[in-house]
Length: 229
Image: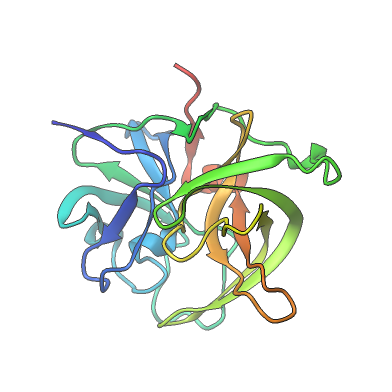
């Protein structure tokens, strides 16, 4: 059996109240597990409950399609709040042969990482993502050293450093359910992974999306991007 999954497809975790997130990208495991699927760790429950890795399975609707292979961090319930996170990512080993195109909208995702050291804020290059809730959206990177707090139903999370993306126009760049979606430049270079959204306020009615850069995620999970072909 072959399963076709696109970046941004909606994925669930059994036993977590119907919450869902987004598939990020197919990547290559460096420990011989073949191609695996990248998403945010909190999408598959590792920040909400203290389960063993083997207890967590990812689903499309009610159909199990894979099992969590590794998560960073691997969190226990007795860890203190706020939980400080530099990485929030998991890889899923598919149950079946999975074909996952590396295309986000009309952008063919390359095997390269966007170089933040050369980012030109004045030129405002455009980034694109496809998420399970908002679909395909485009935005601009406005901060490369933002921090982010979020209160979940079980604990407070704190991300000390990440990327901030503002939407273009009236559409949201991301919202709840888009966590785990991959963000890419229009030339196909991978920027990062969506993990949260700043809620709008009266002073700032346009919410911003918080992402984690892809390089440290790949290193922590010991996976590589898959190049063209």
